[in-house]
Image (tube, rainbow, N blue to C red):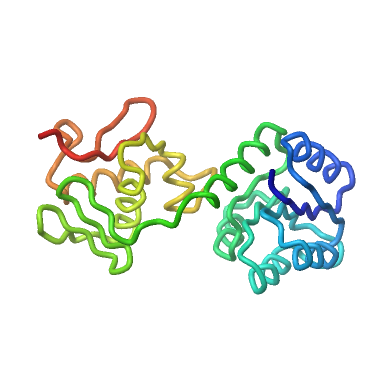
Length: 227
């Protein structure tokens, strides 16, 4: 069970979201205004916040900045604003996920579970090794068989994300959400291109993979080469 604060001015949506969260077993506090919601966050120190952007007393994007000034609590934005620029700006401002209205209770539940799951994960290691691949997250360097790889910032981020999930099949949608911060609407072609560049720099190809293994119809798994 998690403690959740819902900040949503539409009474019907607020009640529906609260009901979904309560049915999941969470302890829910709701507010129809930004300032009352901020007071609840400061007083209760919740595990998660669901935040509407169209609030009557203060725009939700401004409230998000205020929340980030006092807390690291995960925030899922729930809004009717679907423009790409708004999504990117909100995620860059500190939101952990972005859910566009109208959404189903199943979609809401899945996003809540995913964010809470990430929060509960142990801190990521600074040094990751998979076979002869070594990645230093703090120094932002990657080497293969002792030789440094010349990676762009996004190639490095992608390789680090896959290495930290070594052995797991990671979907392109997950890569877009976690590496590009595009939880929806991003182009999977972007992932394909960066994976192709990574493979070339690591001396492998899709037809003869060593570390980056395609699971057709599902995603990519990074594993140590078979000896």
